[in-house]
Structure formats: structure tokens, C-alpha cells
Length: 130
Image 1 (tube, one colour):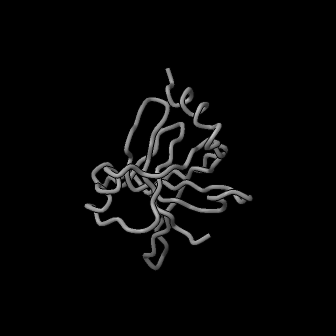
Image 2 (cartoon, one colour):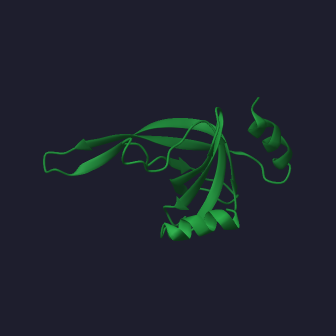
């Protein structure tokens, strides 16, 4: 049972889901001069809800010295924060242009708060100033 689908239907009356593009980091390419460029697989039209982080989540991120504008994002699927031992992370979420915030913004996943079979809750930091 996907509890996120049930809950998001109710929450959606106040905070609607927005179709986003998720960029899954697949590593990098190395140019001749040694410069590394990250590579991604793009998944479009993934429904997401952006919300405030809880006080406890903010304390954890402060302890990790992660600064910037941060939010919780709920979405279907599996995403990763940075894990050097598993060589994973650097996934990003792009919200579409539009009339409603967070229009046109890109968010870097910094921490996975909850991971279930078909959905996750991530903490993300704003990457652009849109």
C-alpha cells in the first residue's frame, strides 16, 4: 500500500502536487583537460509536493553545516543524498516555470529523510536564484 498516494490526495487540496523533472546522477565524464562534468538520467512528470522542514530536520542540517534555502520534498520513487561509499548522490529536482512558487527552481537533494518502497521524503537545498 502506498500511503503517500493516499495522504497526498488529502494534502493536495491545500498544497497541490507539481509535476517535476528528477535528475538522477549517473557519474561524470572527464574531458581531455581533466575537467569533470556530471551526467544525469532525466525523469519527467514526477509528482512532488514541497513543504517546510520540521524543527528536528533543520537541527540535523545545521549540525551538518548545510546552509541555504532548504525544503522538504515528497515524491514517488527513490532518490539519494550524497553517499561517497556507494558512489551515489547528487540527484536534483527541477520545478517547472509557472505562476506559482517554486516555479523554475532547481533543488539539490542533501538528505533522504524517509525512504519507502514507492516514495520518499528528501531535504533539498535551492541551487538557483529564480
